[in-house]
Image (cartoon, rainbow, N blue to C red; front, side):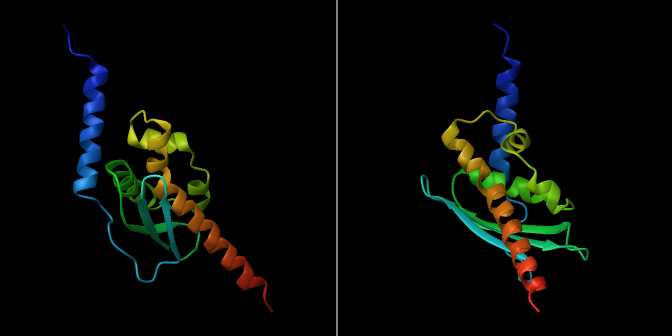
Length: 142
């Protein structure tokens, strides 16, 4: 019987997730971050805090770091999204969907695990909204 290529691909992605979990990129804090947002998944206890620094134009994310604790999927996703969004416009990040995140992960997940995968992206999007809201409120004041 021949090996199923789908199983090999799935195993490769699982190995990549474990690598991100064991050796996360962009783990830490950014002291002068314009965007800082914490979020958690109360169902499983995953927690993440995202920090993002903006470019001079205030529209592009130039650096992202995260801190947190949780399952392999949530922490690997935080590491992956931190790499993916650097250099991207906040408008483009706001438009990212669940399917975009799952595509980045490369795995089919159960609905409960999708929440783990989405935690960091959701925190980043909420942080962008909060940043822009504060920016609007401070520019409208006399």
